[in-house]
Image (cartoon, rainbow, N blue to C red; front, side, top):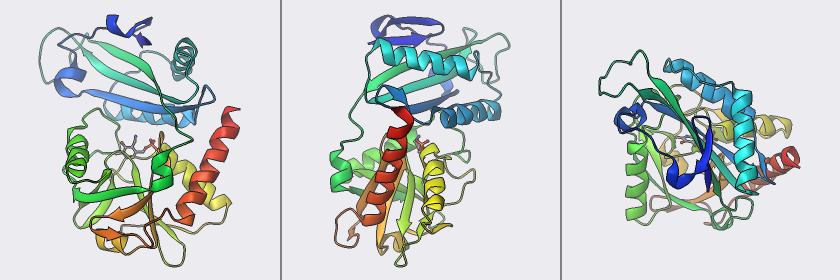
Length: 283
Ligand code: PMP
């Protein structure tokens, strides 16, 4: 695979980052993952806007313009002949060759990007639905910033896997925040989609934003409010969204099967209309 690192396109085995890099030492870094369909980026403007915001919140300076980043992403797609999958991007504060908590004055940021080839449109998980387990959200309080500080999420996902679940839904003060790497939704008996409002408590999903807009266009009722694991477990449907899963139905939460245990019509419909939009955007 050809990857990008600080202005160069090179073989993945030749791409090297310093052991003093603050991305490595402090998770002082931000990232984005953009889906690829038909060899083209999906909703990349949204991802670039969030990247710009994450950088701003951390006083990180993007070394190149977002238009230039998009050009590099597309070049990687071409070089690696990706038709479906994703492009990962990470920007770190770099290093000045030592370990100090305060920001170094003369550090050059590290920018890396690489592609992942994976089938997205045809997904077994979308057909079967996910089993999710709820677990305490032990992440920091700026989950709106997309940092590479992902250990709490990795621990939550691993705990879920260890207990036979596909993923974890995180809870704080008795309410669901979001999934370990996705936004969380339920559907009430009167077909209202419920999801947590945007705040510093969750990542502002680019897919979430697209779904909110599509729901409005299709006159699907949406309520942005908190919901508990108990409400979720007795909901009519549940589902998640993220850039590379689009929409996956959730068919079980903890020991409770959701409705008849099959992907629900609202989750299926939102997946279909999101994919329709993404395919249109990329063809
Ligand atoms: N929440 C978290 C914690 C995530 O890691 C992700 C995936 N980046 C999302 C939500 C979904 O965001 P997006 O739709 O932009 O992929």
